[in-house]
Each structure stands twice: as structure tokens, then as C-alpha cells.
Image (cartoon, rainbow, N blue to C red; front, side, top):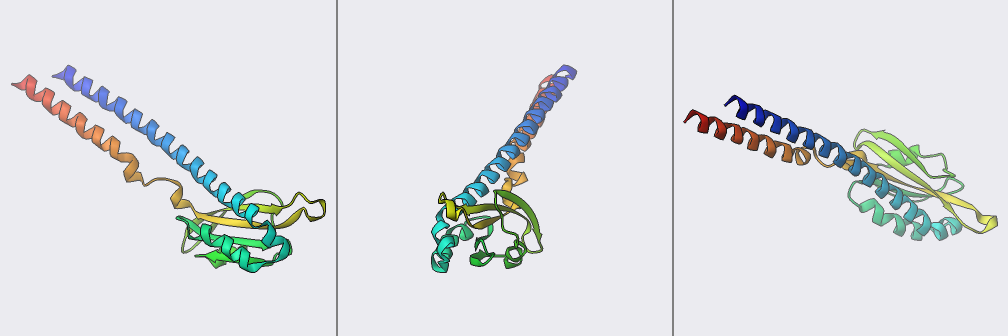
Length: 180
């Protein structure tokens, strides 16, 4: 009985350690995926907004921000000219858009707080051209809600709970066998 219980406790400890490792790896992968998504959205929007930023075409810029602004977890998307003029902005937090007054000349990631959306991670990307006279045309920013960066804790802990219940069942079965 004692050996069986000790084996069950050891097995549970090994399962718990494995689940902890899996949980930490899943969170790392989730954060990396979140960052890659934000960078891709900003880079893609900057590339596509080149014409709109150079010409000041607000209709084209608005059409470009519409798709990212409606994506899951996106708080806002904005396109600005190098003069600071906002060509297009769409999303749930115009207060955060107004706080992005400084143009960006290189890729940046900022963390901002908003009462309605919590922490928002803002991916900023310059709009550039290969033409020597027209190097910098403006910038784009895409804000993603940070809570979308990680899967819900209950989802990650479900395997640990199942392993715990299975461990308890094994201990109970072993105790019943040795008692009978």
C-alpha cells in the first residue's frame, strides 16, 4: 500500500511537472504568435498604404484599415502621413489613436493602457518607398488587445486536471486492491 501510494505520488509529481513545462511552452509560443501577428498586420498595412500615404488618398486608406480593424482582438488600425495627418482610422479606441502623435521612422512596439480595452500592444511600421526623393511617407499603427495574446488558463490547465483525477483514481484503485 505504501509503495503504491509513493508510486502514485511520484507519477503525479512527474505529470504535474510535465504539465507545468507544457503550460510555459504554450504561453511562450502564444506570445510569439501574438507578436508575429501584430508585426505582420502592421507591415502588410504599411506596404499596402504606400500609394494612399504619398497621394493623401483618404478613401483608399480607409478601405485598407477596415479589414485589420475588424479582425479579432484588434482595438484599432490607423494610417498617417508624414505630416502627422491621419488619413484613416478605425477601431474601438480613438483616444489611443490620438495618443500616437509622434511619427515613427522605424518599426516599433508600444504598450498603452486604455480603460475600456486594458493593455493594448501597438505595432507601428513606417510607410516607405524605394524612390530616393520619397523615402518616408508616413506610418501605420495596429493596436491589439493584450488579453488575446494567451489562451485562457482553464484551457491550458484542463490536461493537468485530467491527470490529477486519473492519479487519484489510480491511488484509490491500488488502495482498494491492497485492502481487499
